[in-house]
Image (tube, rainbow, N blue to C red; front, side, top):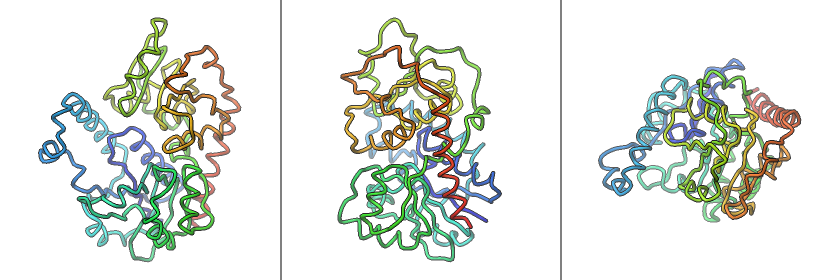
Length: 344
């Protein structure tokens, strides 16, 4: 089959790019012709207008880091992702979408309400809900909503979009509740696309490096909250603006990892690296649900701590990796079965 994937492959984020790579890689490995549809509205391009409009000059250091990081991610996309032609608008995409037999949307917050409301120049974009007319199969794989409850006024829209889906799977337990609230029956919890592959599938990206005792990767400026916790007993490496290969290698060569990144946790699991997830709160609300949905499958919810309770204990190194591998393999097979069943 000829399959088109719609996802946030263009985000300046390691996990966003790797989950797109993993889904495409798996679909190709089972015999399909696969494009990642290169839909990205112009407002997300790095332009002089955006630099001034959003006052990025006020955080010049961060802007430069992000620009360097995006350059490195762009190289990875060009090398490893099979992209379609670029589409800036849903209208332009309408005329080209008919070439695909199957459309798959997923994963990584593609159904968040903000993009639905304001995705194209502050106006609605329903691209990631596969809002196209045509004779193709529509599937959501590991769809993530980026919230635990959807705005009530948008639920009717979701109901209309979901009517045309052959099958819907989600990445978080809260996603099942949102899909149910939109009156779609039978959604399924599946693993993030990165877990469709084995650890050996990522070894091609690992580069030589000195072993590091502790690797810290914190999103959203939270690294400053980690600093008081660290002490001189640890040789620490912090993530900055590495390439994907360097980022994966930092995890692979670490003795232990501290993070608040979902995909960093995924690769800790795949590479057998002890880790701590450090969050503002342990309540299963908002973005925390992605950690609970995954780690509860692996019996590892005890890996989560708060900044206030963070303690680098020696038992961090004690994880039963054989049992963890079994549980991850079982979860991965659920995702593969979902795909294979719904591509028939």
